[in-house]
Image: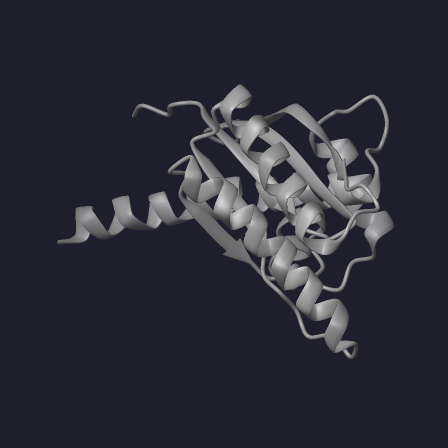
Length: 172
């Protein structure tokens, strides 16, 4: 069976800091290609959103991922924060669409479950597991670790989906 190497970009959107993590995945193995944070300037929101879109698009053009994964919006008590997060997420989705990249979405609970094995894991636990799973020299910053965790979650979830589809095909 052929297991091609896939490149996945994970995106953890935020209006001030957007984390990104780019991994390769082949079969049950994954490795880190790049990670970091897009720290927006202290401009008005529209300029920050444009910066997020532009920098993510540049990363996509440089690293040529096959797929993207992003965290779903979760419920906030502060409606303004939720709105800004949704807008940052929209800027990220525009960048992926501009590069014709398919996008998968995962809840925070799904991501933590896939990476830590516990859906209510802390940010520190996610950082630690990303550090271990990708054999990084040191733990990445929280936003970048979250983005890498999103990419790892997608690598695992999509691999399982492929196996289920193959098994279903052999049954029919």
